[in-house]
Length: 357
Image (cartoon, rainbow, N blue to C red; front, side, top):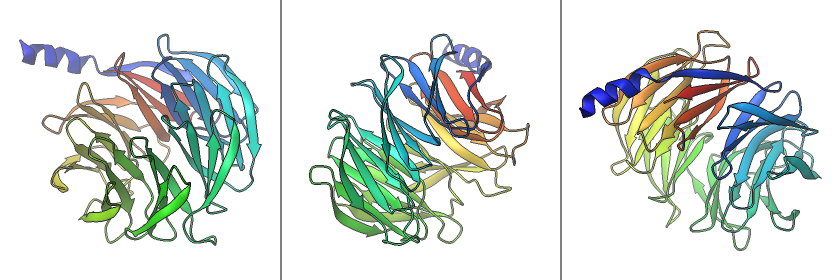
């Protein structure tokens, strides 16, 4: 009976809607409390707000210049947007209105929220700094230097561990990771992790941070968040795009976005070993995980082609169970585990693809 139900659920994996949003949707994030999605439309300088229950655009918030990345504090219902034009924005999720903007200058590349301290962290890749915003006071409270203090430092990605109040920054040009104490806003450790680290992912259950680097055919550096020491280097994973983590199974999914590659490495977080390589699609760039269903959704990038798709992996046996078409140039995605819907933002054709299952 269980197998029969599984077969039925697999057959229901399909595209149920394509939502038209603003121009150049770069990023998408979900407020899991309000069930609303926020899409950063880079080219049109706006944020589309989508009701995840109806899959309709509720409103479009304008004046968000160069909207690039989004982070949400679900407890305060505030949405934070980093703009590639050197601006930061705060949106009130209750009214869906823009309530604060900061003109910092430079170029922001990544943003993250510590939901416990209500502090927001955004990386400025032109200034090699991390801007810290107090979410309650709606003001900038610190500017932290990271990487090398020249244009070669290029901080790329920031992630936050709210449980130990540590912030981690991948410094692409400096080949390092900065560890920041969220209480003092000071860099407490700089870890050498390999050539040009870019994508970061964190398993909050195990307190492990994973950094993709471009060292010799691709590696992933594994850092212990308790000791802030490099544990090991996982090699042979290619040019890793956006990693997905299932903290329940302690598996890491690393898509190799090298042109012509078709590989997604499956890593056992307990042993730091590649235990499987899933092969499909072309140039997989992004992996997002449904922890409840133990399914992994991998977006491909075939040079802006209409043949781009998402293939779905069963996390139990690492087998592909479905392929679904999506829009052009998928840059980000998110899973709503309340309704088991997956949302993929497609920069190339200004849409969000909604996948059931």
